[in-house]
Image 1: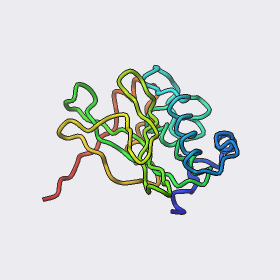
Image 2: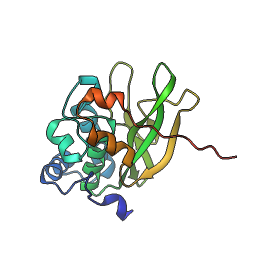
Image 3: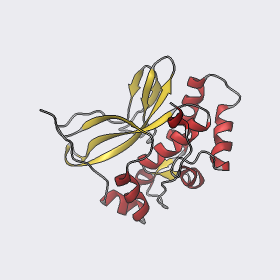
Image 4: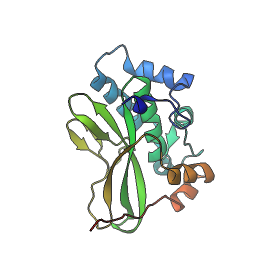
Length: 194
């Protein structure tokens, strides 16, 4: 589990601003589940989704997401992982493969998190931000994610990654505007076993 507590280039919880926000969100609590919920709700509700709000700049590193108050789902998941790790709560990154619109191809990756809760194990949370068609929450043991898997070709990818996928960071680091990211959302091919 120690690896899921590390600070890194993208999940830079040792950044003074991220560490200070993590301490503020913990608010003196010792209950890891209470702290995890506070971190989740902060990122879900206070960090604006770049596409929903048509916001620039494009962020990727956790401290930049916090500084600018905006990010795509991937960037928001980097910040949430950083806030959790700063509070000594193991956290990783997860992905879903979803249709972009109208429940038919093309597809894209969607970024979310898994947090280790002692009573439940890995618990998936999605802080992309709620809106009329999205209602994600923190209610263990039940996962309440932003998007259900409903179309052939969509999938909940089971891995809990220590670091973001390169295909994700490449898009966030090369696109200049929220619109450009929207036009170049990352995707992967699913490999089906026999």
